[in-house]
Image (cartoon, rainbow, N blue to C red; front, top):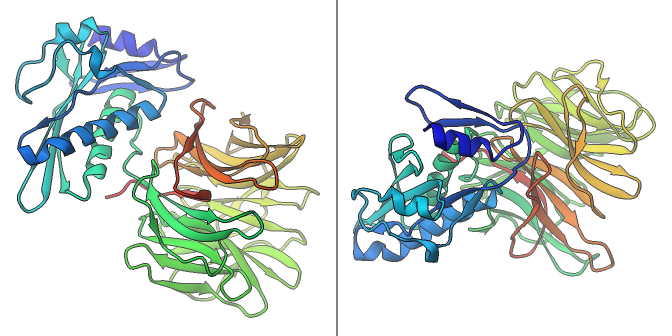
Length: 439
């Protein structure tokens, strides 16, 4: 493994490779990529005639997942000297070294008559000439073949980088259609890469700011169905929904779940004042957490549930503050030029993502939870509303183009600021919220 460790370490600035005894390769990633890791994914072996097409499709999704991170570079199949024709045949490592493949992914797919699909794979360190960890097998349905592919890619990604996985996840967002000013909006959910879109609401009323629960089975969102903003809870499986908070004469919005999924924090406007409240998801009396004569909104829990970050204009313009989850005196953490909003705590607990407006430009940025080490990852006419991937490595957000016909799209970026790319969607899209890993 020594040569492979050296090659992988060269991919990163200030990266520290660590090899645990009898364990998989681990790399702590601190900075951006110097050069992506070359890898090869031959078409998976079809262990029955019915599995032929699916074997090819699964291999393509695995390759797309890895390439899409910006950390890996796929070697095209027309460069291959040899192929993997049997899952259990010896690997001709010399042929893969000759084309500079540093990692090799070999897999096999079988399909049963009842529609069950089994995928097994092995990851090889080509230059060491040995397997990296034990082979794995994932089972599922024919309809769920993409999820199986994401699971394979997650396992490869984690073994090579040491990072937690994130491909087998979903994103809820607001799907937009029609001209600006008359735009219709409805909730939709999709795989993290834009596949398997499912619409959850119709376009009869405006919907905003959907947020996944920690278990991924429910979604909070704001709806104007009654003419005033009200928070709703939607069950993803049944698409059943109910109003969470309905105090007469108020407007409620910007909801988020607590880490245990039992509590909701949100903003409520009453008597011209906007404050942050919390209440049990099952219903009950709300608890007021702020009481300043200013606008407090966009709250987000820390991963351990002990603190809340939010935006407030109590200092004269939008800034970020942190307070105990039970309320109390907040402390300001943003002090740079411009206005800060929509803060979201990283799943790792180490960073807070935010939207920043400065000098006529919008940015997605991150900072430490004490406000230090602020860095801006993007800049455009309008970037806003960050959401974290389950592993805390990637941020997705909304970008809107300039002009009367401006369209909203989803983009993602690594926390190093590299690998900025558009996420494909069937329509215009905004307000993304990343789910946890699926079970």
